[in-house]
Image (tube, rainbow, N blue to C red):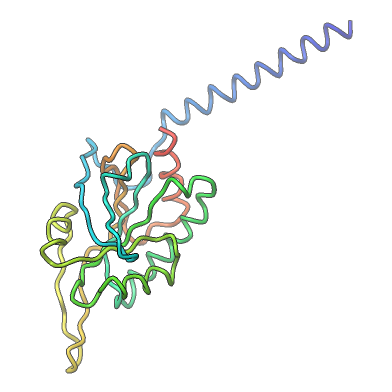
Length: 201
């Protein structure tokens, strides 16, 4: 009798495990992204730009990773620091997935954002963030490919200026496809869930 109880208990346990597995697979297949979806997904523009460490960042070398890109500038007074702070929370929430995600900040103000300035700026938020700069000629094809427009607005009389620019986060999947965008106001948990799903696909 005890043998039968053990057998049936094991059978019920196995059935429950199977139900949970099938349920999780079904949930994955029916996952609804919370960001704005590119449908169909587009091949991401494969750029190369100078990174803040003095090397070269090549998007083509990031296959197998999710890449989050945000365009901004180091003197930005509001949306850029707010967004990078939220992306830092994404990085922390990813846990063991974090080493398969790159968070990239690309300048729209190359006249002021030297590699040294970008290094100082991104490291304020995280030493794992990648800051990219270059000449206008190097950056223009990247801006165009990611639908980024910008304009300088002078403030005061000392030559200082603000840069008006889009405030979107772009998400490239492990196959190098442009899959999602978010408004800069997107919450960390929303982005994290979508990124983890992309890594599990």
